[in-house]
Length: 274
Ligand code: AMP
Image 1 (tube, rainbow, N blue to C red):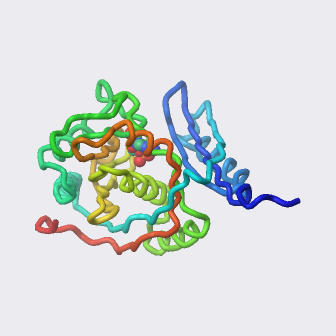
Image 2: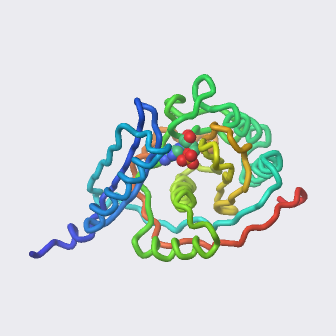
Image 3: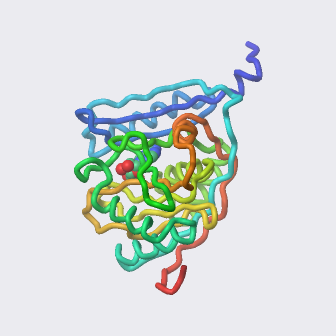
């Protein structure tokens, strides 16, 4: 059978969502060629079933063909890690990095407090991210309950092969690191984006990161105390950024990363470092 080159080169977005009684438990995002769909749907379904100790009662996978003309290509940010002694040091470092990226100091501190308190209504965890004006700290996401979800991003099969090996060589082989790196890559590629702050809502995962064009994806070994179920993401934007355009870009525009950046060994952070 002859397959037209357009069909052959088609990419498909696969999005997984696992939930329990409407509560979001786990999500997954991939952009894959036609021949990988079955395997990736199986793997993501398994990932959803295993989430939160197997509590999911619904696991949905949605497969959509991407219009090739809408696909954008990029290179992933550089990865570096700073080991801190505790979450107090980690948050101090996060504020310094955010300031370096162009976020006002008070706004950076306010964003950290927001994630520490739980950014959703009544101190809950959001499914998506907060969008915040980097100058005045105003919250700009259209729905503060849900937040904005970065979606439709992945690495090419060749990049995945190289990146997986490189991350493993640096003891960063956990799926979480690769996924967050790809998400941060898409976020940083958005117009008007100044920086991203993230730590997980998983009580057992205390490492978080600050990402910005100037220094890439910088992991910080502790951004919250162990056992804390709160977390989230903040996308800082320049004043005047079109939020409607940003949300469409983050949620809908497919972005494929064709190469990775550098990955540096972890370094102990000293408080006089930036
Ligand atoms: P996680 O690192 O997966 O534990 O996610 C930490 C927090 O980031 C979640 O509580 C959400 O608020 C937010 N988040 C997770 N996935 C996304 C996404 N795809 N886009 C935007 N925010 C997200």
